[in-house]
Length: 286
Image 1 (cartoon, rainbow, N blue to C red):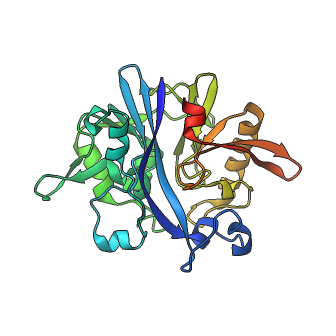
Image 2: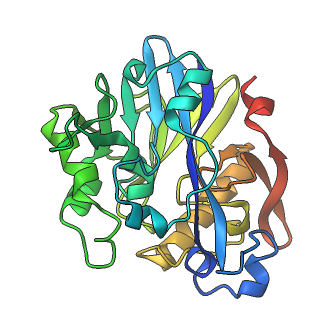
C-alpha cells in the first residue's frame, strides 16, 4: 500500500463560523484571521494505492460553480487534484473508487464536473465507484434547512444517475471494521448524519482522515466545535471519544482542512488530549 496527499485547492472561511462560540482571542492563537475575519483552509484529500485499487478520499469543491459562488470562499494557491495526481504519475481516469466522508460541497464537489458542452453534469472520475452510506445519502438528498446550502444537488444526484454509486455497510457500534474498501471507518453524527472517518492501517501505523470531526489543530480542545455542526453536543462526545482513542493507540491524524499542519499525533495531558507532535506527509508516508 502507498499513500499520497492530494491537494484539491485552498480557500478561506469565517473564523467565527469555524469555531462557533469560542472567543476569537482564543482561536486566533492557532488560526490567525485576516482583516475580514477569514482563516486559511485546505482541501487536503488522500489517495490510497492498494493493489489494483486507487482510492481517493474526498475531492474538494471542484470547479463547476459560478464565480460568484467561489467569491464567497476566497480561493488561494495553485493546488488542484489534477496537478497532484500528475505529480505521482496518475490521472483521474486511473481512480477506481472515490470515498466521500460526507456530501458537503467542499468535500464532494470535485466528484462531478460539467459535461463537454455544459448542458449537464457527469462524473469527474469516469472509471470510479462513488462511496457514501445509505443514511447520509438520504440526509443529503432530503436536506434539512440548516444544511441545504451545503448539499448541492449538482454535486450529488449525478453520482446516482451514473450508476456508479455504492454504499458502505453501517456499523453496529461506532467503528465499521474492514470495510469494502479495506480500511476501518469511524461514524460520527455531530457534524452531519453519518460522517465517515477512514482509519487506514499502514506500515504498522493507523492513519485517520479526520474530515470535519477535527478540521484543524486549533480544534483539539473538546469545546472548540464548529458553528457548522448540526448537533454540537454530540460532536463533543464523539470528538472526546475519538481523541482519547487516538492518544491511547498513537494514531496519526491526517488533517483535511488545516492549511499549515498536515498530520499530527496527540497525547493525554492534565487539560485533556492535546497536541503531541506535528508531521509532514513525507515524514509518515515515506
